[in-house]
Image (cartoon, rainbow, N blue to C red):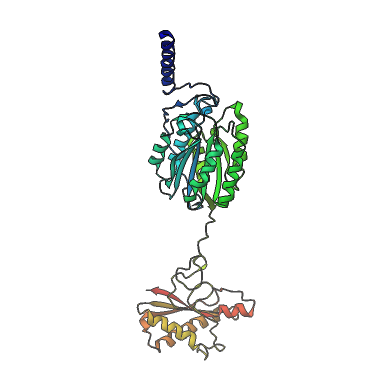
Length: 413
């Protein structure tokens, strides 16, 4: 009788020891199914330098479009199997958390964002329920999110994603603004009701909700990726990716950037053409770029009185041009240190000698006009240029009128 009692005790003790071993960090955890018990993982994180994202440039502008990121993490027992893709060779549970660690590090520090974290599975890893909330929607803090993620340290039970999605409906009621729902899973053995619950979330939050999913599965679990793709397609925005799609810092940066920001190309405005002296003629066309304020200029930007007419072989200023000359007088009086040369020009009608003499006499007449109106003669000189500097076509009446001009060039300011 004693022997029968002792044997079960010894057997129970042995099982207890085996279970204790199973709760230690296991680099090669039991190859799993939903029947495998809880396996604890002390996850290590490889060095990771995040790519800086969403940097505005003269040609590119980023605008934040996501205000909340809510993560649903698969902690079912199938995560205890080895992730046999790439060079990772660790449990799927571990590589999921390594992904979230790098995702968290890539989020810029200078944005306003809230985040939350919920898992699904069953057993002691979820406090004997189908889902566990590790972080409610709160202002995102990199260290706090990592600490809460570290509390998810084991995987067990089946894959009741539908429960996590149902509870997320309440979790997200406190979220203000747009929401990115991020599901990290192998998509294995998920009930179709998870799709129904995701549709209910989409109905509830509408355009505010985008569903992203990251497939952490092996080749034999390809159906899981198809399921996650279908899940992400429920919302009008979001996407499904393979874990291998974000296996570098730059690829992770692109994924996070696309989730949190939109970008727009800025077409640089052409610089306004310069008119430094504000005379109405652009610098690139301005032969006289230092025209004083208020001066009347010709199409070359030179201070000029165009079309000033005289009687034939006369240098007397005719009536009707006083206003143009008086405006020049005002400029000179407003700028008392200004010295100018009065330059006479003619059209091509008549001989060269005649036009040279005529232009000089007319320049002198304008000088006398200014002196008679209290402009000190010491500020004035004059010179005739005849017909040798035309600014228009002498074959037309309009062109000849432009060429018959008196120009003021500044000799001293």
